Image (cartoon, rainbow, N blue to C red; front, side, top):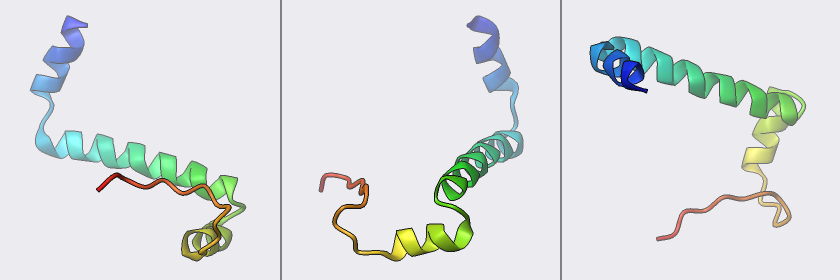
Amino acid sequence: MQSKRNDDQNESFKDRAYRLTESLCGLLREEIAEHGGAEAFVRWVRSDDEDADVYTLPL
């Protein structure tokens, strides 16, 4: 665990940003694939379907 902390401290901002955005891109690719492609994903995002899985943040 200690080596992970040292690696994080030695990681540049640019490298960290790239690593994190690549992780997010991977998650988005998985979500798009689960919905049957980009067009279906966009339709799902734009839908007002009450039965859809909606994640809301408390105000």
